[in-house]
Length: 350
Image (tube, rainbow, N blue to C red; front, side, top):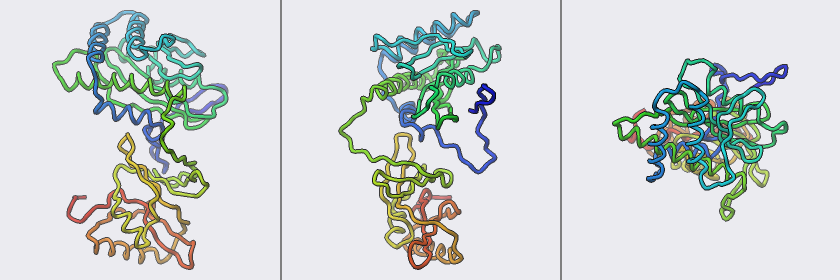
């Protein structure tokens, strides 16, 4: 978003430049857990009963949008925030932006609902209206993230988006799951997926609420990192809690064996930590090494490939963003920092 002459402008992320938008599931772990839960969350009878009631209530056409929105809000409030007597979803109008159900904790928006009778019926796009409402209720002084779920119900179609600010003037909004028709289908997979999505959303809203009350588990050891620079795609320069510089990389898959082999032979930075996140992404933290260009980089890369081949490993992706040059010693040393597609020879086709 950008503020120009007192007006907010929303822009889609440009795909033609060199910058890669960070996926929403890497910006906030609640979104990551919700996305993963939509695939495997265990639901109960109460969740099934809610979906049957929701579909039954919103299946038939409405002529008045306010009646449609009020019915959706009543059902969602009774399900998503049940157990919190003081919690409600209120229809609101803020600086011209309409909410058909705003669930806040103090001034923090956790969930917002926007409804339309059907697509193309006029009155604006429900997703953009949801985004506009989120933007307008952000505090004037933004000193932290404000993650929020945006719920669209357009006719019989329900969609769930996540939105979070990445600074004082930028937000990222993405769909977190497929859109579901609120119609009774003789398709067990579709109906079960809808129930699982609703149950996952209920758990996610509770998680956002609990985090506002700082009810996180305090008995787990945590290490914090401060991001310093966005190097390339999903590679970042950062500092750990002691102030030491490290590299942080996010990947869909990771060859730990190849990384450790390269590290032991001096072809890669030392692996400090890695973890498979709830979103399925791999969080990798190697030690940082100084990076500059080198005329003998090609010869050293060929040596690395030869060493890996001798150990029955293949490393197929040697683009610039996956290689680093270290000049901290008496000579330039080429190292690898990317092991997404590193596997044993003969185990995979590329």
